[in-house]
Image 1: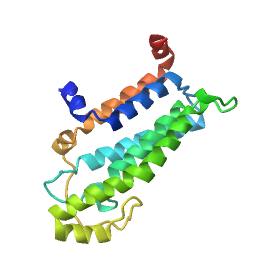
Image 2: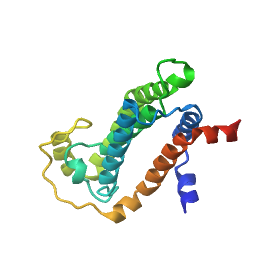
Image 3: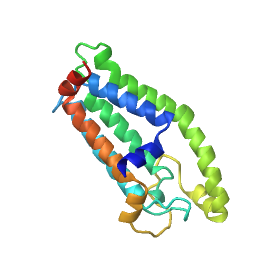
Length: 199
């Protein structure tokens, strides 16, 4: 089942993500207990919580989702993903007292991610996704679009009702996303042994 999921989701975008993940594992130098490590783990945890909350409310193409975190912001999954990426790069960050390519690579990954995310992915997804939602739910979308921001939460909240649902969480395959993040974090902490496999 897991194999079928990854084969369905395989794309150039994911191949690049996997490539960066492998390089991070090989070059990463977690400084356990450091300030950057603690901040990084906090970002990863909060990013997972946001994605978990959002995935449990998401019902693609069935209805316009305006409950859970979608009450406050249109794109909570992207916000959660951004926090996780930055968090992983922070815990992979080596000591900056002697910065070289290996120590700076996590920062480079973070910079590349945000340039790609803000300059290409966000505008592309907004144009494509918003048009689809407007087509499927014209009246609901018009009110929701006017009342809820794209990425900076409005904590007044959109007037909506809905409960978090385990079936929605699993239907959106969020458990596989969680498993991938946990495996990556574990591998980062054992990168010395992982590196030996590749060398």
